Amino acid sequence: MRLLILAGLAAALAAPPALARAFPDPQQKPAPGNEAPQTPIAQAGYSAATNYQLQCRGCHLGSGEGAPRNDTPKMAGFVGNFLRVAGGREFLVRVPGVAQAALSDAQIAELLNWILEPGGMAGASTPANFQPYSAEEVGKVRHNALLNLPGTRAGLIARMREQGLAIEDGMGTP
Ligand code: HEC
Image 1 (cartoon, rainbow, N blue to C red):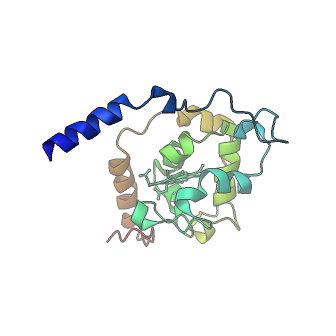
Image 2: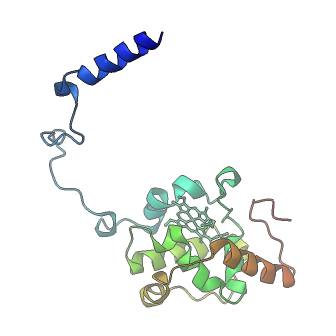
């Protein structure tokens, strides 16, 4: 048995290196009709709704319903509550999914406003006096990394609770 394994190993090692493939293949050509260089997403001029589909939907799902199995909280009908507590407005820009999205500051501002504005997925959770984000505001806080995300979020949730807000983030948070 041991001999067989050794013989198999030797055969594998002796396999012609020609079988190895370079990846990605440097000779590979784009598919016909697809020769133009790719446009970076931030320069493609997509709407906020499209940027959401491209950059956020994978985790937050189509209507912001979230996915507790992936630890992704529900934004629909809830996320606007962060604007009701001190530090929450900045938090929404600094969460990694937002701060590190392949979008410009102006596009992030537009996307957050699209989520939070009346008729957006945040629904009635957004306070009535909501002031839209600007590109300048996003630029100022975006690169200020959140070093303790769970702790920061828990603190904000605790402040919401002090105000008697229902924590309907889909995470089963008691
Ligand atoms: C790779 C998965 C992933 C992607 C992509 C992603 N998010 Fe998130 N998002 C999360 C998770 C998980 C959380 C919970 C906090 C954390 O652990 O980061 C979160 C938290 C948030 C929050 C704070 C709400 C809360 O209840 O904590 C906002 C706002 C948010 N995301 C918006 C976005 C937007 C807008 C995009 C697209 C530009 C995006 N996210 C992309 C996974 C993602």
